Image 1 (cartoon, rainbow, N blue to C red):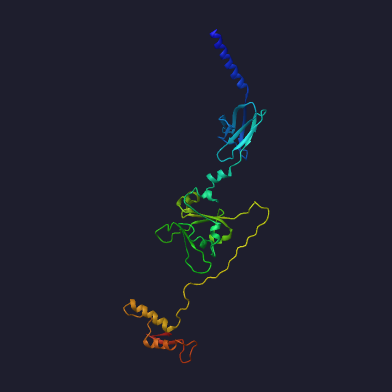
Image 2 (cartoon, rainbow, N blue to C red):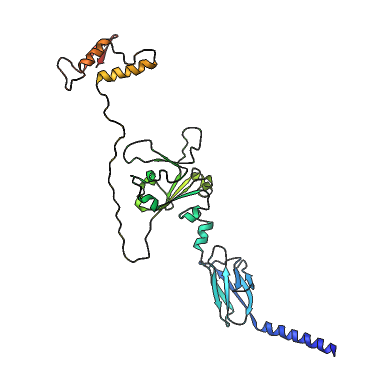
Length: 322
């Protein structure tokens, strides 16, 4: 009797297993990209379970699933995850995956366009358009003055409209002649910062550490400045026109009322020269020469008795005086 019960239990277990197997089916397929290239190592999993398979070198997979309709979760690094519904009467599949643009941004196109990308390279300073709106200047480099720590901007000329010299983290060599100008990319294209209209700037990212060279090569060793310009807005179907204008003038901050008379120019020059050069004279005028210059000090036009150009023979050669 005990032997019969054991046999009956085993038979019931076998029938249950056979019944469960009969309620499943095998599906197979291939996973391709947009160019019909087979994708290797793609995970194909029955959604909500741990039942799954991986594609081989031909992009093919085989998987046993319930006999009813199932949903497959198909995923791979660099591609968008896709949910595929498989009806109960379908056993062969061809699945296409699209490239994940965000994943491409994070793993390949590092540093070329948005703040999120450049943050992966190291120390970054970011200036947005709102920070530039209230700054009055004739060019973009001058607007950045003092806005990013570690970005040094200097001008070697005081002429109106002159561009500033950009430097990140100081000089790169103790010798002279070393070009430490950072790389400037405008929407991913190398360019000059002062050729950009400040009103067109959406954001400026300044990569300040040497790790930028890992992305941009040797040209990025002295830092990189990424300028992203404004684009269109698809939130409205109407055209938007904005106007921003300003006017101003520039002039030297020092007095332009310089000494132009011959007497005082020569006298003051010699006075300072004597103080540091043992009472010697830089301008070798005699007392008579100074007297002649003094006589002409108030002449606005040339007086017939006091010509402005006098030629005298000094030390055996003719010399222009006064």
